[in-house]
Amino acid sequence: MKKIRNPWKEPKNIGEYNCFACSPYNSSGLQLEFWENHDELITKWNPERSYEGWIGVLHGGIQATLLDEIGGWLVMVKLKTAGVTSNMQVSYLKPVKVSKGEVTVKGKLESVEGRIAKISASLYDGDGEECAKAELSYFVFPENIAKARYQYPGIDAFYD
Ligand SMILES: CCCCCCCCCCCCCCCC(=O)SCCNC(=O)CCNC(=O)[C@H](O)C(C)(C)COP(=O)(O)OP(=O)(O)OC[C@H]1O[C@@H](n2cnc3c(N)ncnc32)[C@H](O)[C@@H]1OP(=O)(O)O
Image (tube, rainbow, N blue to C red; front, side, top):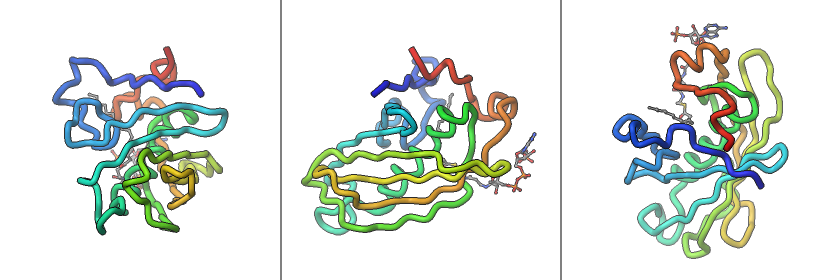
């Protein structure tokens, strides 16, 4: 698995880079990191009880955030541009027990039709069981727009 570099992780971005899911500077956020494994993008995250909905169960909104974020980074790494989520459908298959520890989220590009990228993503609990999955549509911007408006730094910035 290849580690993906976070191109915005620079002290000069403190206070500016606040993504709830991926900013290392957002103390209220998930502070996700990413890896690439062939056609998949992967993140791992250790839930704490403060992210529960029902007792002991990871809140479904947090699960949706994890599934959405893997899509955002997949667009940046695999399609080499930036996009925004235009649609996502989540299926919650089994409760994610916080006590089972680190969850793993994997995303994969399914297709690109015009400006819409279709992405599938799955969330696995600490036992490796698939507990949620999503079908995502991302509206993908041309690279020049991504660079001009979305701070997209270009693909080389994601690799050491
Ligand atoms: C300091 C460092 C910080 C770094 C910071 C990093 C953060 C790193 C996080 C990454 C990971 C995020 C992962 C979370 C993902 C979400 O959470 S995204 C947020 C949730 N989603 C949204 O907010 C989307 C809301 N929906 C929409 O904006 C619109 O419905 C959609 C999806 C853009 C589609 O709209 P549409 O009307 O079908 O499309 P349209 O208006 O034709 O085009 C949209 C825009 O693209 C432009 N465009 C499209 N195609 C072209 C083209 N070929 N040429 C030029 N312009 C074009 C259009 O001009 C238009 O621009 P504006 O008019 O808005 O200025």
